[in-house]
Structure formats: C-alpha cells, structure tokens
Length: 317
Image 1 (cartoon, one colour):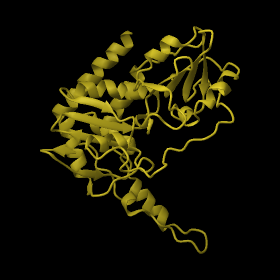
Image 2 (cartoon, one colour):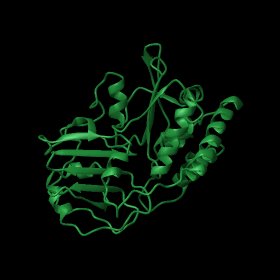
Image 3 (tube, one colour):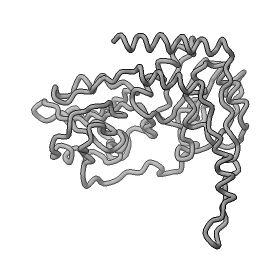
Image 4 (tube, one colour):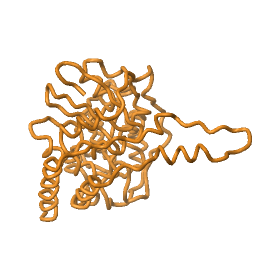
C-alpha cells in the first residue's frame, strides 16, 4: 500500500485465491481489507507469494496478480476492475513480485535468488492431445506458412527451453483443435528472429530479456492480449471465444461467499494423532483467518451494477 509517499506491507496466509474478490469493490474497500490483516516487514518471493496487490493511492495505480482458473476468469476480472476502480490505472503484474518491487523503486530482483530463472536443454516438445492446452505455440515456417500446436507447458517454459525448442516443435504432428482458450501463447518467427508472447498468468522473468539463449532475438511481449497470435493462427486451428457471462457470475457469487476457516481445520488436524514418533507442526500464520473486504452497501451497488452491465453485454454478443 502506498499513501502520502510511504508504503507498507500486509499479509494474509489464505488470501492468494481471494485477491480479485478483495479488489472488486474498489480502492476504499480494498484498502480497509488490507489494513485489517497483519502488517509485516518482510517480503515473500515468487514461489511463496501466490497472489498480491499493490495499491498506490498517490499515483492511482493498482498492480495485482493471482492465478485464474481460466482465460475467461482473468478477462472477466479485468473488465470488472476497470469499472470499479474509475480513474485508476489497473495493471496485471505479469512479472509477479518483480513488478511490485520495481514500482516501489526497489528493482525486480529483490525477492529473487541469483540464477532463479531455470533454463533447460529441450529433448522434446510438450505437444498435447488435450483440446484445452495450457498454451498454444505457433511457428512461421521458411515458406511463410504458420503452423500451431497445443502444449502442456506454460508460455514462459517455451522460452526457458531456448531456440532449440523450435526444431522440436516443427517436427511434431498436429494437435487437436481447441475447445477452450489457453492460458497464453508463444509465436516464433525465426526469419525475423522475433518471439511474441501473451499470457493471462504470471510469466516471471519476462522483463529480464534477453533470457539465456535468446541474445540475438527480439521479444514482443503482448501482456494478456491474444489478438496478434489469433490473427496468425491457421484457419483450422483458431482460438475459440468462450462466453464471459459465466465467469462474471462467478465473480458475483464470490462477493457473498466468506472465506473458509482453514485455520480451524488445520488446528483440528494438528491435534489428531499421527504416525508414531511424529509431531505435527503448523505454520502459526496458517491458523489466522483472512479478513476479507467488508464493502459498504454503496460499494456493493457499484460492483453489482458493473457486473449486471457486463453480463448483459456478454450475453448479447
């Protein structure tokens, strides 16, 4: 949280999957929510921090990241936040904690150990038989045609494998046409020596370009905008366009659903007898329930109005 030139950190052990819920009702409710949770002096790294937000009241900028269950859930959250944070610049933190610490002027590597970005020598391409792959990889061939495949890897994993992955992908057989949107995509153009990437999830390290192995390649990072790759895909392998209405309704349901009391569950589990010679140990922070946003009736009305308008628009498409 940034206010009047100063910033402070707050922590909740169980809030990672509720970041969007706590932000939906606007900056005032989100600020109250964060301050109701525990103030801390340390940082979490990208492994342990599974969701976070930075609310900069001075510059009216919101950074946030959290895992989305689907492409539609991410896009729905972006659409609602754009309406419930009027006058604010809402940014998804693709670089995870790196984007947040960079915003504070602390650099991107504050929470990262040297060599944290792990590369590998690819021995194969993660083609998939699923119609709902994690990502889509497309490749411009020497004759100008474009081929595309579904992949079980996350988008950034294709960069960790280096350019050697391109020939392995080109040798793959076709994969099934898509029935749902992936979490992201990567497009390789060897002739132009350009990599284009988009994602609706974290791609930590994306701003450390060039990544190992890509020193003479250019990166075209598209954020969560899939439309450039969509325009390049072959006609028999298009991106589907899932309806957003169901994802928007799920967001509305979350407004009235309190977080589960996981702390009480863990306390009971820790008290149960275990194998002989073992002693159950529970992280004390895990026993503290998350304090969710407590929006006023007026704040709830704003987000409900936004959701109703977006659902109506989605159903009319």
